[in-house]
Image (cartoon, rainbow, N blue to C red; front, side, top):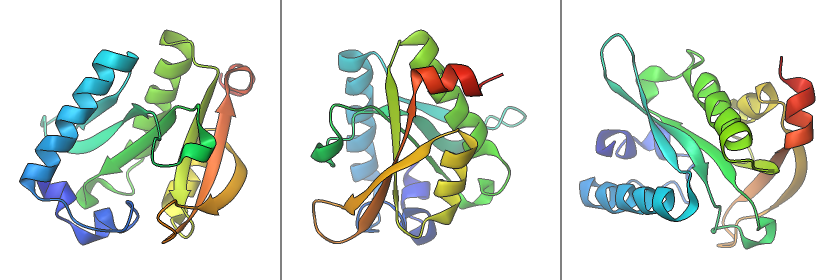
Length: 159
């Protein structure tokens, strides 16, 4: 995961675009693990079945960084660049959404993407999410779009 976090192209759309070193990645992983303990959901490792290679993560988290959307649970994903464009993020995010609605009984799941991150916006569309607002990240540095999918919409749009 540290190698993924060290790639400027991967991190371009994450917060301020800053890279994370191995220590920062370890701290982040510990925080993700605590969220599983406290919330009953969190981030899943995305691995390539044939090789066991770590492709990145997907999963659910509380978007504390954007208080105006709370209470909310966000579906997110981050894959290494060599895994882009293969449908992995969509497949993994869809599994996380299914887990949130079917296993955790969530009423609503959001996704937050920086304006200009067209790849992430395409994934939200494939998940059946709708744009509900555009706002500015609390740091004031970047505009973000908030997409939403409600459980009643999920039931009617999922085969």
